[in-house]
Structures are given as C-alpha cells and as structure tokens.
Image 1 (tube, rainbow, N blue to C red):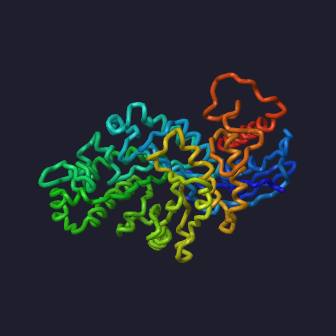
Image 2: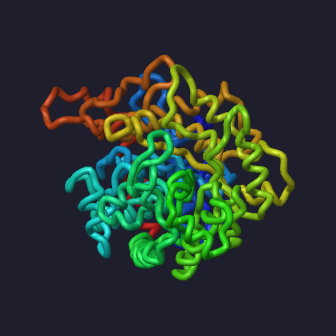
Length: 487
C-alpha cells in the first residue's frame, strides 16, 4: 500500500508574478526509475514534496521504503494561503522562514503578510523612513529592505507568493506616529484631538478630506509595488468605523462640499481613490469584504476576502453575496487559527467546505481558494509554529484534495503522520493524537529543530538513527532537485 500523504500529490498551479491561473494535471510514477511529469517548475516542487511523503519505514527497521505507484493529481483550489500578523507581535526572521518551509511541506502557495497595523509599523520604508523609526516597537523590531528581499526569494524558491497587506483607512494608528496629519482629528464638545472612550480615539482613521492623504499614498504605494514583485497587493479596508469622521466638523464640511450624504458614501470615495492609485501602477488588489458589502464598485480583477461569519449571519451568506457580484473570492472566515480550544479542534477546520453556500455554477467558479489567518494578539515567535501546525495542515488538505475527500477518521492518521514528518524537518508541530513518532521526538540531537543547542551530547547509535538520517538526506536531495529545476 502507499503510505498516506497529506493531500496526495501537488503539482502547484501558480504562475509567479501573474494571475492565479487554472491548475494543470501532472503525474508521478514511482518504479525502479521514478518519473515526475509536470507543466511548470512549481509543479515539480509539489511533486517532489509528494515523493518525499511516499517514503516510509516499517517497525524497528532502519531501512526506508517506497512502493511502486502512479499518482495523477492537481490542486482543487488555486489560492491556498496563510496570513501572518507581524504588527501586534513582531515575528523574527527565522520564524518567518521556518514557517515558509512548513507551508511548502503542506503545499500552501500564498504568504499573505499582514505586516503593519494599529499596534506597530515594522516595515522599513525607503521613501518614508520615519514610519518605522517612530511606528515600530523598537529599532530592532523592523523588517529591513534586505529582510523583505530575503523573505520573497526564500518563498519563491518554495513556490510561494508573498502578498503584503497595508490596511487603510482604519487600523492605522502606527502610521500616525510619524505622520499625524494622515489621521482624522476626532472632536468632543468642540475640542479637536480629544478621545471619547468606547467611541473613538483622539486621532484615528485616515482623513479623506485632505488631498495630502492621497498624495502620500501615491508615493507610498509606488514604493510598495516596487519592493514586492507580486501582481497583487492586499489593501485591507476592513473595520473602518466612522465614529471619528462623524465627530469632525472638517469632515462634515468636506462631505457637504462634495455632495456626500452618508458615511458609507464617504468610505466609497476613499476606497475608490485608493483603488485608482493601485490601478495606475498596473497592479491588482485584494481587499477584505467590507467595501463590497457597502456597495463599492471595484475593478473586475479584484480578489475579495471573506472574513465575517457568526451564528447570527453565517459565512455562507457573505460568500453568496460577494461571489454573485462577479469578484474572485477567498474564504477565511472559518480558518482563524489564532483561536484555540482544548482537544482536536482541527476537525472543524477540516470540515469547513468553501463551496458550501447557495450559489450558481458561476459563483462557485469565482471561489479561487481559502486562507488560514493568524492574528497575533497572543502569538509571537514562541508559539506561532506550534499553534499553527498541524492544524493548518487540515486546511491544506481541504484546499488541495477533492471535495469528496472528507472523512475525518481517515484524515486524522494522515494528519498525524504529516505532523511527524514536520517534526523531523524542524517544525515544532503540536500533537493531535496520543502516541509518538517512532523513536523520534522534536529537539533530539540532529533534529534540525529550532530549540537545538550547541551543547554536545552522546549521539544516538547509528542503527537507531539511520532511518531519520537517510530521510533527512533524501529531503536535502529533494530541495537540491528543486533548485536545479528552477535554473
């Protein structure tokens, strides 16, 4: 029998720096002369990953085996993303890179980098260096231009796109540390710049009444699209509450002068101006669902990410509404993995089906995939990897495999085995079942684990460690092969 592989074979479907193209069918034949056939280099990466997942050992034997088999496969969804928030807590570079490794092991293909937010501004801007100088937590908690180039290249070699998010007009307190004029002064009892608890701060949300706001964004976005080569830029635009706008006599006067009668229309004015700026750079954009819900008309190639959903209004309602407007749609609502609970919560993530909503065939075609979200209120470098993996692996299979691959009981064994693979590759993935990973545990000498020290300890006898050693050697050969494919 073929040992279980997470999501089986992965050809990958993206054309780097271009649109999310339709997946191609590729095949892997394992015999005395293994052969991998694929249409793109990204397909080769996914196929080599599947090949590594076919390797197994039996019992206490130190030998490794691989069965003869033929696999013809393709990803079900084109967009398989993970969003990391590096603003609420800074994530060190080694953690970001290790997570990109884990994404490749699980055939995710988009790193959505929620790089800045209210709490901090760790992106180092060349055009506006004071943004990070004043907005970051400290001078050491910054992603330099060199860091960002390293992340982009590291991701590219693993078949992963990097899509940055710079969320406006809300979630922008950190921008105001350097450029307070970007924010709207809030008013209380005729006084400017005064906070009203539970309603608004002293200064918040970008000020759409100032032309200087859009002049700034023109320059800033112009820089961002040069730094990040992907065709898409995530513009956020969620949770833009108008309480501060409502308090401002300047905003009221601007609305009157421009025949804007509601704050929804004011938001539409802002959104349209920013979308026009991005379009002028010949780039495309992703936005959260909020502007579309409020009636904003966006470019036909816009990708809309659905994040809302609760017991009162389930996410299915939002997916039906957004997809009927003709926009390509990503589901994130049911995959907020920053929330935790005791036990096997991975099951609910595995059972979330992106097409489980009422719609037409055209609407279903508009759903290009889904995304795991990790907002970082209670996450940093100490717990990101263990909280994310292997729970995100459940989402990976849902986004990759056929819709009828949905049995939880069989999936738990694939997921547990994938967890053991990740441990051997240096990812501290948390357990989902009782038991152990053979004679191996994370942190053993030679484990490639992030907690390994330089302290010398007695090495495991060769006979006991040879299986793991050969396994890691095979992985090294696999990655060398990947790089050769990309030359």
